[in-house]
Length: 115
Image (cartoon, rainbow, N blue to C red; front, side, top):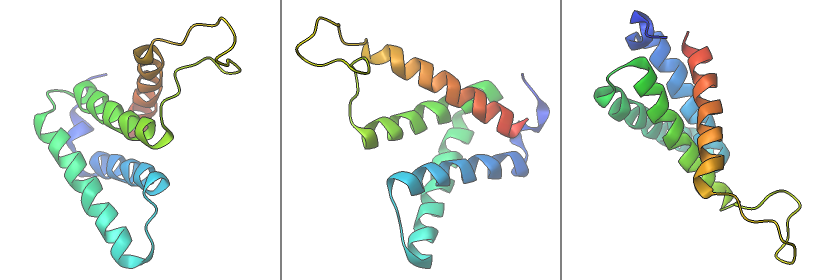
C-alpha cells in the first residue's frame, strides 16, 4: 500500500476535494465567499494531517477518522440496531464498533481515490 506518490500535489488535491464534499453536505454554504471559506477549511484540515502523517496509510486513516467524526456529529448518535426501539430487548451497539467499520470503509474509498 505504501507508494511514493501519496505526497504529490495531485493526490493531495483529490483528498481536499473529498473533504470539501463532506463539508458541503454538513455545512452548506452559498455564494463564492462561502465556497472559499469551505476550501480554506479543507486545505487547513488536509495540511495539518499531511504534516504529521508518517505514511500513506497513516494519512488516510487520520483523514478517515476525522471525516467520520464530522459525519457522526452531523447525523447525531445512532447506537441502536435498525428497527430497534426502547421497548424491545435488543441491546445497543457498542458505539465504537459501528464507527470502526465506517472508518474502515471510508479509508478503503480514500485509498482507491489516491492510488
